[in-house]
Image (cartoon, rainbow, N blue to C red; front, top):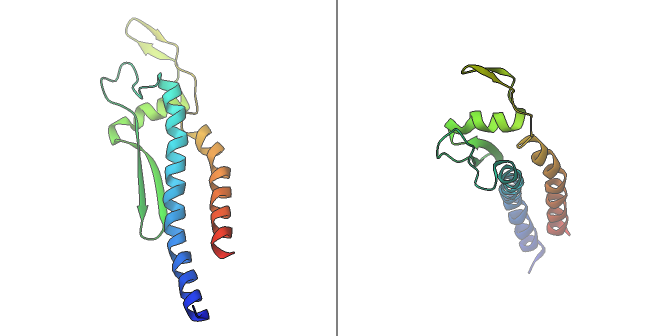
Length: 130
């Protein structure tokens, strides 16, 4: 191969790297959050009192290499928030609901996974350019 051919190959790899890195980061974050959500919901991603609906996570990667990890489906954003932030004490029926403690179901695993995702991306980039 010529030097120009080598440069073209490296340029193509670097161009694809951004898309691949964001897709992989989104998948890794989703996986970390789902592991914690399974622990906090008894393994089935369902919360008592909300019917048969299950907690889920939606991921999206746009053409500008922007990845989004969001609670889904839309109707399940409230239960995700209840798990993550907890609820406050409130009147319920004839008594008083004591509230629920915050479990950090979304925040804790995401914050814990981010450094590993960054290390993974850096290692893959170093392997690409070396």
